[in-house]
Length: 429
Ligand SMILES: [Zn+2]
Ligand SMILES: [Zn+2]
Image 1 (cartoon, rainbow, N blue to C red):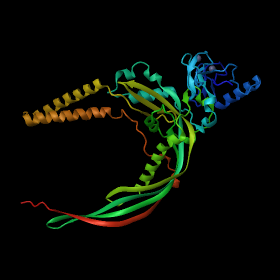
Image 2 (image 1 turned 180 degrees about the vertical axis):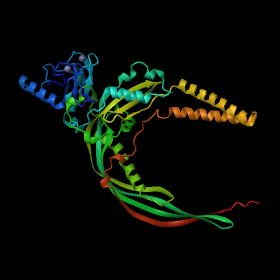
Image 3 (image 1 turned 30 degrees about the vertical axis):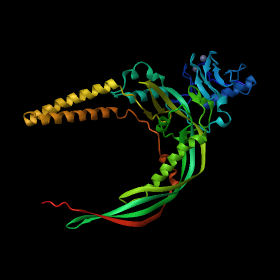
Image 4 (image 1 turned 120 degrees about the vertical axis):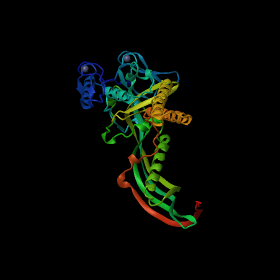
């Protein structure tokens, strides 16, 4: 049984990647385009005439196993070179000849994706997005944009668990309503404390949690959302031209990240129903999650990682929507230079202004100008730094609530006690 597949152009025999731009298999050499269905039909026909059930079956096994019996690589069907891989590798590219290889056995059994979202953004569009993202970022190290670094962006199908569950329960709050008045001597504040309970239930569906140890959680969270209505059934053809590894984090081990988001969203929904109080604090919660299940999905991501100053920076582009996220490194030299220029310039402007307005400069005015210039300098560089990091771990799942399922009940708004504070008025003599 052969273990790798590569798709070739039926017209010229060149590499045939799945193109995000056309949504079809488009030949890299002759530009011919074929729908996934057409390629499937051709492959089936060839298989029938070859008397085998898979056209891509080869006589020599192409798996390379290490001494421990585990997969250590595959032989490229095009050039015969050894491609390093592990048992989780599902799609890869030959580093010697660039041939695309898909390993269908990595998608078998429990590893068969329930759904795939095919790439809709092609490599050129991804590179343009990245160029736009770095454009005008004055603090970015020059080596970052130099050369062909941006060309190293890679298309990856990332394994995700998409969680679904029902949440029900209640959240208890303490709320305060206050009244203020005064007499000739005192100011009074009376605080009425209430015990508040909101309860309800709601359904969540499609909360994505990446199932790959290698992927940065914050980057994967930040490229959400994906449009699941465009998902298709798994087919190896969508993986032609991309990298992919099957999941290496079990569904149950990813679940706590989805549960946390569900619980926080449930709390927020209940909190939104506590109105007309001046102060509100959450006291306790009792939330049950039930009917939980997960689907296994392969989602398209353009990725680039860069090391700078011993830290790893990663950028991700949602391969379906084109949403770009990332954390860009700050060049310390450029940071200092912009800070100093901003301080010197504002100092010059402030001195000129002070001289013009006051007709001379006192020691007090000098100190004032210097302090103001330093503050302006720091504000300026922090503005330059803004937008250089757009990734963060997601803590809520409000996009995944089925709005029709939301039910909230005002279970209790019970008065508990009042407390009145009085403060003596400041008498002015
Ligand atoms: Zn061709
Ligand atoms: Zn090769």
